[in-house]
Image (cartoon, rainbow, N blue to C red; front, side, top):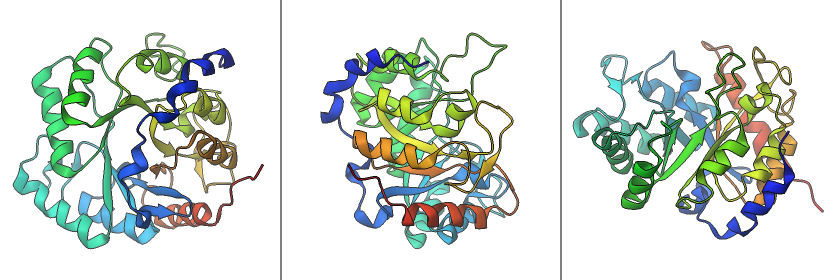
Length: 287
């Protein structure tokens, strides 16, 4: 259970820079900046994925490392690509009216040359958030990078692993303790679906991490506390997306929110379209 006493650790965090500040109003879907993680369309190449995100009504994009560049160029699109290989992706983003805001989940190790390559890629692509499940001996180096590049690092959470006690990023308290005394550009990518799978109420975790959430992967799942639960249309599952969005609004986080729809992989454009349409029509609770 999340100890509410830890909320006191972040009460002064409202002044921290938030990921949405650099985004235009045109990047909003309803009241939130929103789009899709390219992993939603991992069975397709980057160019096709960007077309599908536009078709679904997304405005922002989070890339992941390793997706094929195009139908004719199977180069893996990641931080190892050249400027020439990135140019068509930049052009496609502009053509589709999409904004690249995140890159991950990518491993940040205690290796300056490798970390620098990742942050240089993000800077070149105009990306402001590197999403990672970093090596735990890399935080001093990561802090150096976020200061040098003025790019945020957001710790992503996968579900709790009962057979792997060394994996702790599922626990928002643990994540908070890693970043609370660090540069304000070090925080969390709130994967609300994986919190649901871990038996954590996402709204509680969101309030705990106030001021340190820079990005979110949105999933609404068939079951609570079951690692095998799968995605449903937002607002219809057990993740309680309305409470998630109201908690985000409460802490002053307006996105980016990224659909990461890991179901109906070959035909999920319609599902993502329905999710974003639901978001567009969602009305926040009033006090």
